[in-house]
Length: 454
Image 1 (spheres, rainbow, N blue to C red):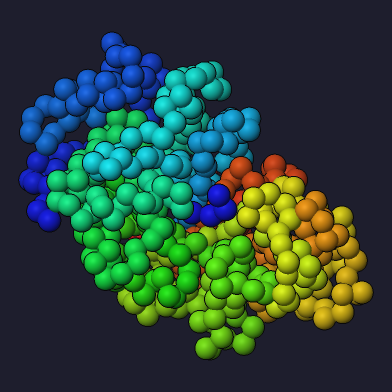
Image 2 (image 1 turned 30 degrees about the horizontal axis):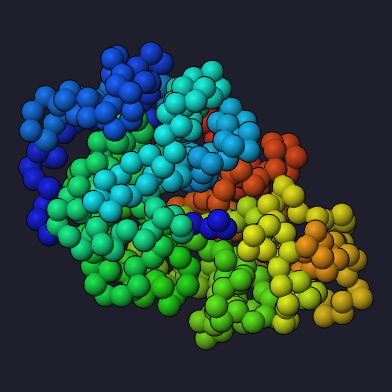
């Protein structure tokens, strides 16, 4: 995601669920069956026994209430479960302007089973007064943000290796679809996000398309949300049948970042999340000059409805030691692994020197002074050439996120998402999630996101 066959059968079609997909069970039912077996897999097996017939299972639903509010645009965040170990539990998250939380990541076993990646955090330990991180999110959904959608994300950059082997085998593919639906229902969540990074040839493209189609058959709209995350590089997007993919999903999360970094073939610094290319046209095909807008145009050319395109925002910067601006050679990376600086930890000391264009004179740049390029819609700062200083650091800031949110509104795209909320600044202290949400008009004073016409 960022830094760091035969059909299933007619039984799926008979499953029912309230159209109010943010429904949350009563708190006492959060733990699943009353008699809880010792481990999660046994609990899930016990849950399966509650099915009322072939392909059917009982689910907890509720009727829509006047608390469900319209959210015209998506303003979504990924929330990795490992951030709990950093003290970032759900109660500590700023969700005031958030429409969807992608809970990352579920694990994909080689036999296709979708399971929890950290049962200790997800379901067992006491978090925010309830058992497990999933339950803590559901309490917030029920008590504070009833229009919030909770989505289980499967895969990610570090956990995509099993997708190919599973989707190439009918039995394993069916198991993936079946267990994904079962796990979402058992946990009482609103849908599934597939983050396969990423199909790399025609065969995998067909497998990816079929996976999403079968998931949609098993998890019909609007009762369930199905989304997928895709890279912004045209070289990667060409390996996907995006027109067909878009028919099966509610949103395509465009990862419009990591254009440059500690990756093969990258020999110069650059902006890692710019909205526009320096001059447009052919330069957009060059790895270091890829842009969010170029990827959006490609998706539209492939027949993806604009309302399904959700533009990704990185809540982190990338460091290039030895460079003092974009387009320069570098000799390493500062910050955390991979040259990453969390947005809340960027070493910026002077935001008053932001300018509308790049300076080619390093002596004119105050160390760690923030710069902003209005043409590219990209921010950066230059610090000391040390691990702590970061050298040239490229990232999104309040100005770039505001500009990207306005672009989304003007182009009538689906909205924004952020990887990931744990890197953001707190509310009232420069939160980028809040900047995007406020421009898009996303909040919890409107009715359900599903009321939006597509």
